[in-house]
Image (tube, rainbow, N blue to C red):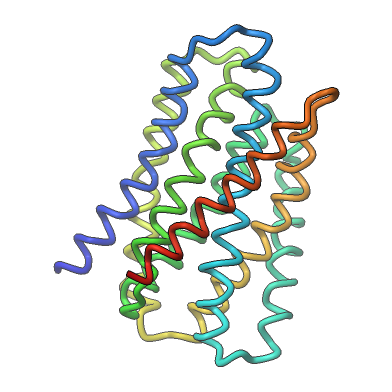
Length: 238
């Protein structure tokens, strides 16, 4: 029961960062031109850096351990990219009002599933992965709010939608906790598929939004985001 309560709290906290990011975007009052340009692009890059860090520092290394460094790991990673490519085509994400929100869900759900499985297996990276999921949801929630707001939705509607997404984390996390804890190969496979999908989303949807003409600083957000993930991994050793 203690383990189940922990996974509920961890996934709920990570999911709560989605509406928190939206609330920050709603309440932020910065000069409009700068907010919509350099600052917004920097936030997008920050989220991309954290996502990349989660893949490189937590998801892929842990998955390889679960699969005993099998060559099949490469196929699973590639299949994740192909799966998310197919999902994007199916959802026609680029014609929807919020590719950031859809992309956030496409990585939040499998990551929460993997988080539950990792917690059940007793790995020491559970809290680190939960923190990284929350940290990436924060800027993604921020950017999703801006995109939905630009589409004409009211702030209250957007924040209620984001709040409704929070329970998804505990539900999916508990599924991973109860089903995947002893299924190391399946857990590793899910982590690699999620990693491949996240890499696809970074370079298909997120990275193209980062460059800003005559401004080079937004790309530094990706470096900062990856550094945050690395810091978490370093602290996790103590």
